Each structure stands twice: as C-alpha cells, then as structure tokens.
Image 1 (cartoon, rainbow, N blue to C red):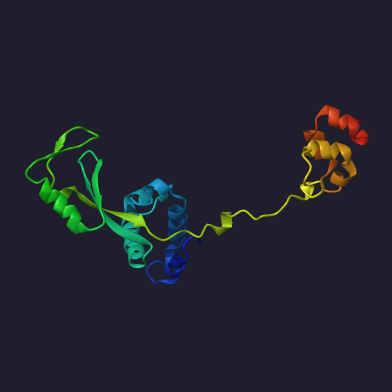
Image 2: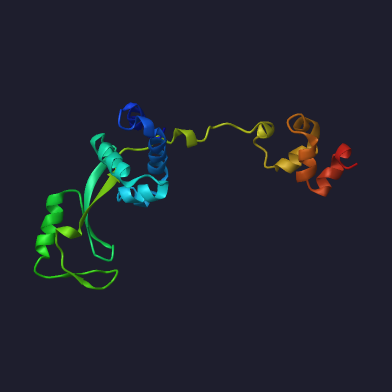
Length: 192
C-alpha cells in the first residue's frame, strides 16, 4: 500500500467488507496529479472509482481523523469556479463578510456573485506522503554493459567486436531482429 495507515481500515468493522474500496482509495490518492492534491473532494473519488457517495464521504472523514487528509474550505461561484481557498472556516467566513455588501466578480464566468455560506464547500488536502518505493529505480548496471564500461563505443559496436560474449546473455533471434545488416554480416553465423 502507498499509505500504510490505510491498512488498519481494512480491519475496522465498518470498512472490513469494503477492502477493495480502500485499496482503490490508496491508489487513487497516490497517483492523482500533484496539482489536485490540495483540492480533493469525495465526489471526485466517488465518480472516478465508482464508489457510493456516502462511503466516499465517510472515508474522507476517517482519513482526516487519521491525519492523511486535512480539511480546507473553498468559496465557489455558482458556475463552479473556486474564488478563494482557506485552511480555516473562520477565514472563509471573513471573506464572505468582507464581500457581503459588494458582490465579487468571478474571473471565469465574469458575473457578479453575491456570497453567502451556500458558497462554502469543504475540500481536502493530502498531507501525508505516499510510499512510492515500489517505483524507485534500483541502481544496477545492465549485464550487457558491464565490459568496456568506460569506452565510447555503442552497444552495436561492442556486439560486433565480441559477439560470443553477448550471445551467452541473449538468444540469437533477438540479435537478428535488432542488428543492422552491416553488423549481421560481421557476425557470420547470423547472416545465413
């Protein structure tokens, strides 16, 4: 799992039978583009992963209590454009009070919007880092490249100069498929 804390949810009574949803949430949170990780909404997870909306809301609430997600507040225009994001409800309400008497212009729809508490929605920010170790590259040298490491010769040149060495490591049909005709002519047993 990308988020080890989610493993404990699989044993929790309410979510025990929904372990596949938890696996789906784990993967979704880890692989969602970085630009969206500070504005997650349960509705998006529900639609993307075909999860019932009520379960999605419960999971996001649970993840907030587990310190995987953090609640944030967005003030949005009726067209859907986010006008302002705040980490506290107090700041969101202060923004509404500030513009209570004078409407604010939405940059997206270009309409004047009168703000009230109906414009406030809860969004979530991913605060825990995913364990992406399964994607880390192992620092290994290719067996084909071990000899003559420092030279500037290409792999094709090295194969042409010492074909027996490389044939021990790969079947000959691979060479027939990949080598140019000039290289194949140098390797006599492949040009038949």
